[in-house]
Image (cartoon, rainbow, N blue to C red; front, top):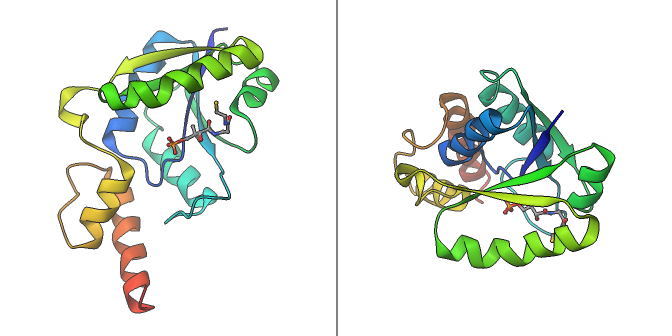
Length: 164
Ligand code: PNS
């Protein structure tokens, strides 16, 4: 069984993420979308909400499941018999950021990283941009699954109501 992991914060998941997950599901027997819980970063959505949105968005793939992890990604990989980490690359900036992490992860436990070029139509997408555009009233419907758009709209409305 060749198992791979697609790690990320997914705050929230967007079509660029899902493109990479879907392509990883063709390359590997099983793909685990692993949601990192990094306490130092402030998130719009809590871990349970991010997991729920991903579970819904990944339901179409039989060999994809969703899980949460804390601590080192390499520990998660070792404990779950994960053979490869799959990361999408939108451009050279992502490569610069990801390469040291790939080397570090490989040095720690030997787990390899597979880079997948993001499709051009999603190469400008990031969760941060989606949140910023949505917060200022821009239309992000083309970039996220419909249930994510619903939650995003509701969360931003809640925040506005509380003056945040
Ligand atoms: O979507 P993000 O914010 O780029 O995801 C980052 C994530 C969760 C994949 C990354 O922060 C991570 O792997 N965190 C786990 C901690 C870890 O293993 N750190 C060492 C990296 S070499």
